[in-house]
Image (cartoon, rainbow, N blue to C red; front, side):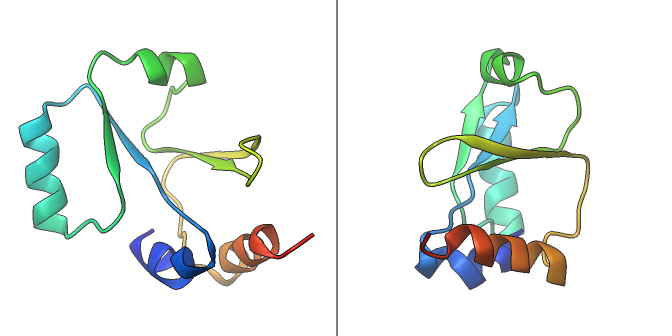
Length: 95
């Protein structure tokens, strides 16, 4: 995901990670250790995960420029595959 973020962030693409029910210290240590370059938000009580129906971790949501949920992909993925990169390019292209 970091490579995807690095490739497309200048085109308006962003990634927001949401950590569920871990402490701020645990998350900060992980972010530093793994050199996570995109924002990581905290859902300490699991309310946001509940509202989105998260049952798997990781769970991924694609949201367009208008803020609409346009896709969901539960489980681990190869986010730097050719297919995913082409999808991101198409979502970022002007309409």
